[in-house]
Amino acid sequence: MNPETKPVVEVVDLFRKFGSRTVIDGISLTVYRGETLVIMGGSGCGKSTLLRHIIGVMKPNAGSVKIFGDEITAMNDRQIDDIRRRFGMLFQSGALLASLTVGENVALPLLQHTDMSATEVEDTVTQKLQMVGLSGFENLKPAEISGGMRKRVGLARALVLDPELLFSDEPTSGLDPIMTAVVDKLTLELTKRSGMTAVVVTHDMTSAFRIATRMIMLGRGKIIAQGTPDEIRTHPDPEVQQFINGEPDGPMPLNLSQDDHEHHPHVKARPLVSARQRFRHKIP
Ligand SMILES: Nc1ncnc2c1ncn2[C@@H]1O[C@H](COP(=O)(O)OP(=O)(O)OP(=O)(O)O)[C@@H](O)[C@H]1O
Ligand SMILES: [Mg+2]
Image 1 (cartoon, rainbow, N blue to C red):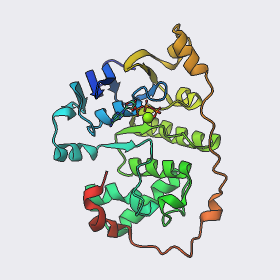
Image 2 (cartoon, rainbow, N blue to C red):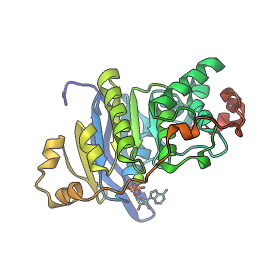
Image 3 (tube, protein in one colour):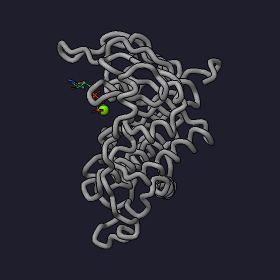
Image 4 (cartoon, helix red, strand yellow):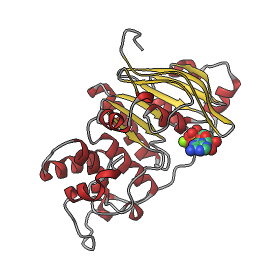
């Protein structure tokens, strides 16, 4: 990490309680342009909650979050909407809209933030689905694809505006090892070639060490360790060692070849732009 590099995210003394439970207990971190920051930590330690605060979906009890230099905690919904044009977010659940097709889900940010023609929208969606290994799945609904495939649709949607900053919450959970490698390679290519900055939450250690330029480990609402992958690998804290040497979640097999899904004559295609009117107010 080059300290001269401009920060794209700056979190200072962030606190958040739910009822009497403090989930974020004084977190400060900085993300620099071009780096891939991996955030790790046990289930329930507050990783997703931290991301939600960074992207402005949740407001903290105290503390500051700056994205691209602007204080997101002080922004209204419209200002947050504007800044969303510049970053992508893959939610842990995928957060796809169930009544829209895969293609429409991926198209939504384009429909909200650009005035692309119908053909441009179709072409961009096709290209992004191809990037995540899902060519030909445009007309299926989220319920008709596997969990790992939904994850990848969420990633395609997060990348559809070619963001300079990507937040990914467990991008590889539920993916088989090959698809995990494909997603990791994509993240690496985007950060190395296009200068994208990535903040990735994961407890897949293979993936974490493959993509990270810097790592942060959370525990009990605080940062318990941070450093380069080498520093984390040799970190003296036994909790860190226990975590990084633990077995990652077993990958859910997808076992579906693309060819099996290439043609879906029973599914009627509809123009992706028709989603604009129906879901204008729901676009994430
Ligand atoms: N909206 C909410 N209301 C109340 N409690 C919440 C809310 N959101 C999160 N929490 C609590 O905050 C804690 C951290 O949750 P979070 O989803 O951030 O964990 P996580 O580190 O992402 O876990 P995992 O690895 O399982 O995804 C949990 O105890 C959760 O119950
Ligand atoms: Mg989570």
